[in-house]
Length: 90
Image 1 (cartoon, one colour):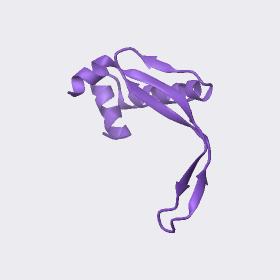
Image 2: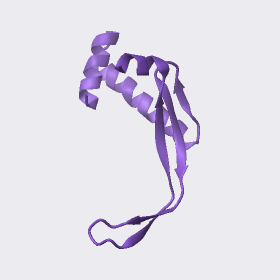
Image 3: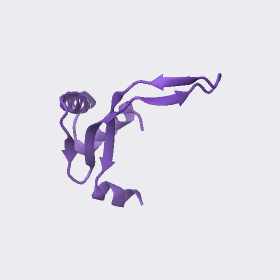
Image 4: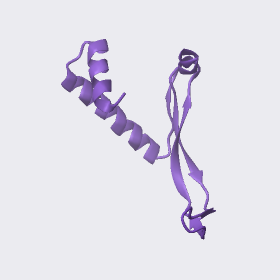
């Protein structure tokens, strides 16, 4: 499912126009992104938790040349599914 398909489903399920569903989805994405940038967790009970985790600098290899390279430290977004979501995917 891509973003356009998600907007269509949201509009149908919630009885909204596609424009309103797009605004709601964009607002969710923006507010979640802002919270993660500030280091907060976003928890949606039953669905899951978005959080930021740090990866330390590490060594890797260029697969084409085999030369060892240094991979810089960075922050990554993680998602841990909630119990209700996990139960529906079985």
